[in-house]
Amino acid sequence: MVFNLKRFHDMRIDNDLSQKDMSKILGVSEDVYSNRENGRSNMSVDMAVRFANYFGVSLDYLFGISDEKIFHSNVCFDVFTVANILKKMRLEKKLSQEQMASLLNIPQRTYSSYENCDRAIPLEFLFNFSIKFNVSLDYLTGRKNEK
Image (cartoon, rainbow, N blue to C red; front, side):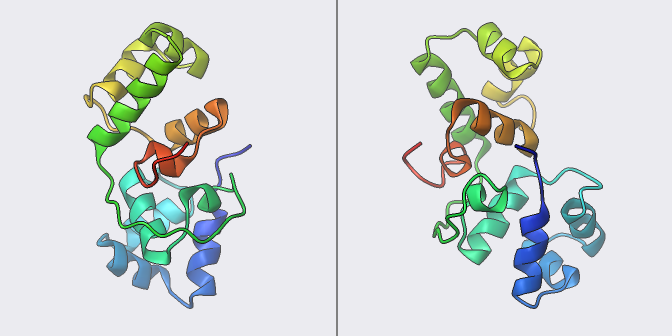
Protein backbone atom coordinates (compact mmCIF):
# COMPACT_ATOMS: atom_id res chain seq x y z
CA MET A 1 0.00 0.00 0.00
CA VAL A 2 1.29 3.43 -0.93
CA PHE A 3 1.14 6.58 1.18
CA ASN A 4 -1.25 8.77 -0.81
CA LEU A 5 -2.94 12.14 -0.19
CA LYS A 6 -5.49 11.91 -3.03
CA ARG A 7 -8.46 11.56 -0.70
CA PHE A 8 -7.52 14.83 1.02
CA HIS A 9 -7.86 16.58 -2.33
CA ASP A 10 -11.05 14.72 -3.24
CA MET A 11 -12.68 15.41 0.13
CA ARG A 12 -11.93 19.13 -0.19
CA ILE A 13 -13.25 19.29 -3.76
CA ASP A 14 -16.37 17.23 -2.93
CA ASN A 15 -17.19 19.82 -0.27
CA ASP A 16 -16.67 22.77 -2.64
CA LEU A 17 -13.72 24.11 -0.69
CA SER A 18 -10.65 25.77 -2.15
CA GLN A 19 -7.15 25.30 -0.83
CA LYS A 20 -7.48 28.80 0.57
CA ASP A 21 -10.63 27.74 2.45
CA MET A 22 -8.86 24.68 3.86
CA SER A 23 -5.85 26.70 4.89
CA LYS A 24 -8.14 29.00 6.94
CA ILE A 25 -10.00 26.04 8.46
CA LEU A 26 -6.72 24.38 9.48
CA GLY A 27 -5.01 27.60 10.55
CA VAL A 28 -2.08 27.44 8.13
CA SER A 29 -1.04 29.54 5.17
CA GLU A 30 -2.40 28.69 1.74
CA ASP A 31 1.11 27.81 0.53
CA VAL A 32 1.63 25.43 3.45
CA TYR A 33 -1.68 23.67 2.83
CA SER A 34 -1.14 23.48 -0.93
CA ASN A 35 2.34 22.02 -0.50
CA ARG A 36 1.05 19.41 1.95
CA GLU A 37 -1.98 18.36 -0.10
CA ASN A 38 0.11 18.10 -3.27
CA GLY A 39 2.84 16.09 -1.54
CA ARG A 40 5.55 18.71 -2.08
CA SER A 41 6.18 18.74 1.66
CA ASN A 42 5.21 16.43 4.48
CA MET A 43 1.84 16.81 6.13
CA SER A 44 2.02 16.70 9.91
CA VAL A 45 0.02 14.22 11.94
CA ASP A 46 -1.65 17.18 13.64
CA MET A 47 -2.83 18.63 10.32
CA ALA A 48 -4.17 15.26 9.15
CA VAL A 49 -6.08 14.80 12.43
CA ARG A 50 -7.57 18.30 12.23
CA PHE A 51 -8.60 17.63 8.62
CA ALA A 52 -10.21 14.29 9.55
CA ASN A 53 -12.01 15.84 12.54
CA TYR A 54 -13.34 18.68 10.40
CA PHE A 55 -14.87 16.32 7.83
CA GLY A 56 -15.90 13.59 10.29
CA VAL A 57 -13.88 10.87 8.59
CA SER A 58 -11.31 8.36 9.72
CA LEU A 59 -7.62 8.71 9.03
CA ASP A 60 -7.77 5.15 7.71
CA TYR A 61 -10.23 6.33 5.06
CA LEU A 62 -8.16 9.40 4.15
CA PHE A 63 -5.07 7.26 3.56
CA GLY A 64 -6.85 4.48 1.67
CA ILE A 65 -6.41 1.87 4.41
CA SER A 66 -10.18 1.52 4.73
CA ASP A 67 -13.23 2.47 2.71
CA GLU A 68 -15.23 3.18 5.88
CA LYS A 69 -15.60 6.92 5.64
CA ILE A 70 -17.77 8.14 8.53
CA PHE A 71 -15.99 8.56 11.83
CA HIS A 72 -16.58 11.21 14.44
CA SER A 73 -13.87 12.34 16.79
CA ASN A 74 -12.83 15.66 18.21
CA VAL A 75 -9.63 14.31 19.74
CA CYS A 76 -6.75 16.66 19.06
CA PHE A 77 -3.37 15.30 18.16
CA ASP A 78 -1.18 14.75 21.20
CA VAL A 79 2.37 13.49 20.63
CA PHE A 80 2.48 11.96 24.12
CA THR A 81 -0.59 9.83 23.38
CA VAL A 82 0.98 8.55 20.17
CA ALA A 83 4.31 7.85 21.91
CA ASN A 84 2.54 5.92 24.67
CA ILE A 85 0.59 3.86 22.15
CA LEU A 86 3.79 3.01 20.25
CA LYS A 87 5.44 1.92 23.49
CA LYS A 88 2.38 -0.05 24.60
CA MET A 89 2.24 -1.93 21.31
CA ARG A 90 5.98 -2.65 21.40
CA LEU A 91 5.73 -4.02 24.93
CA GLU A 92 2.65 -6.11 24.04
CA LYS A 93 4.75 -7.70 21.30
CA LYS A 94 7.61 -8.20 23.78
CA LEU A 95 10.05 -6.35 21.54
CA SER A 96 12.96 -4.09 22.38
CA GLN A 97 13.21 -0.70 20.74
CA GLU A 98 16.03 -2.14 18.64
CA GLN A 99 13.85 -5.03 17.46
CA MET A 100 10.92 -2.73 16.71
CA ALA A 101 13.16 -0.36 14.76
CA SER A 102 14.54 -3.27 12.78
CA LEU A 103 11.02 -4.45 11.87
CA LEU A 104 10.19 -0.93 10.72
CA ASN A 105 13.48 -0.54 8.86
CA ILE A 106 14.52 2.60 10.72
CA PRO A 107 17.45 3.29 13.06
CA GLN A 108 16.89 2.38 16.72
CA ARG A 109 17.78 5.93 17.74
CA THR A 110 15.00 7.28 15.52
CA TYR A 111 12.42 4.87 16.91
CA SER A 112 13.51 5.69 20.45
CA SER A 113 13.13 9.41 19.76
CA TYR A 114 9.51 8.82 18.67
CA GLU A 115 8.68 6.86 21.83
CA ASN A 116 10.39 9.47 24.01
CA CYS A 117 8.82 12.49 22.24
CA ASP A 118 12.27 13.80 21.33
CA ARG A 119 11.40 14.11 17.63
CA ALA A 120 8.23 14.83 15.69
CA ILE A 121 6.60 11.63 14.51
CA PRO A 122 6.17 11.75 10.72
CA LEU A 123 2.78 10.86 9.30
CA GLU A 124 4.42 8.48 6.84
CA PHE A 125 6.00 6.59 9.76
CA LEU A 126 2.58 6.13 11.39
CA PHE A 127 1.12 5.03 8.06
CA ASN A 128 3.87 2.42 7.63
CA PHE A 129 3.48 1.31 11.26
CA SER A 130 -0.27 0.96 10.71
CA ILE A 131 0.24 -1.24 7.65
CA LYS A 132 3.04 -3.33 9.18
CA PHE A 133 1.11 -4.12 12.36
CA ASN A 134 -2.43 -4.05 10.93
CA VAL A 135 -3.57 -1.34 13.32
CA SER A 136 -5.77 1.68 12.70
CA LEU A 137 -4.23 5.12 12.24
CA ASP A 138 -7.13 6.39 14.31
CA TYR A 139 -6.03 4.10 17.14
CA LEU A 140 -2.38 5.16 16.81
CA THR A 141 -3.35 8.83 17.07
CA GLY A 142 -5.70 8.28 20.01
CA ARG A 143 -8.85 9.02 18.01
CA LYS A 144 -10.36 5.62 18.87
CA ASN A 145 -9.78 3.00 21.54
CA GLU A 146 -9.72 -0.20 19.52
CA LYS A 147 -6.92 -1.23 17.20
